[in-house]
Image 1 (cartoon, rainbow, N blue to C red):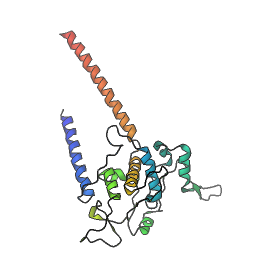
Image 2: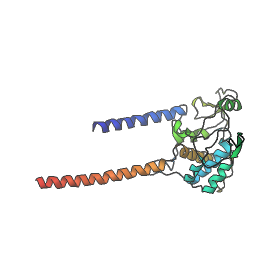
Image 3: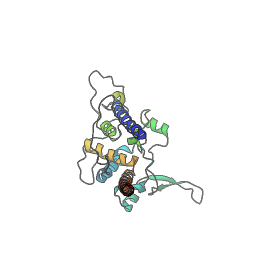
Amino acid sequence: MLKLIKSLSAAVLLSVVTLSGAQASGGGVDLKSVNWQHTGLFGTYDRAAAQRGLQVYQEVCAGCHGLNQVAFRTLQDLGFTEDEVKAIAKEYEFEGGPNDDGDMFDRAGKPFDKFPNPFANEKAARASNGGAFPPDLSLIVKARVGFEDYLYSLMTGYADTPEGFELTEGMSYNAYFPGHQIAMPAPISEEGVEYSDGTKATVDQMAKDVTVFLAWAAEPKLEQRKHMGLRVILFLLVMTGLFFAVKKKIWSDLH
């Protein structure tokens, strides 16, 4: 019982810290809240949204941000066929070799490869982005307090600089970024991509779609974990019932 109370107390404390951190991530501003399909006990990823999110990542984000913890082959979990995954991988170029002469060469990507970083190193990335270092997006949803809500709020939080606010040259105003000054210009704009499924590419839609994709990238085994958890709970319930029945039987004989 004492352990249970301690666990519940820790869970409550974590919730309070997370909520406070979520507000802090937005510079004291409450984050936008979205009812994400993949959250909750029975939540699953919206695969159509995740596939559109991949398109947003490739056409908008990949020029600055890497995704080097995600292998192309795992995209099959989002509903892509093996041939589609091979086609996506071939869009990227990797260094291969050495060949029989000992020379390195460029080759097309293969399913076992991971999304490459657009820059050779951190210095090259900073040189191309005015000194700012674009983070890798593989775990970005888990790495930011507020998780999906923070990322979505950030992408939709660009606005005109309020009167009286001193914005540093080269920075953009964002209502949800700490300090409200961010080196990254607004990454998405209306009709910034043309969705292959015909979905209207509004800023809100693209922000939600790429957030779902990056949530999957950060935790691709989420659904399996939930399914396992439900099976364990069901098993414990059945075993509890059996133990209770056995106990009742034993004590009835004693009486």
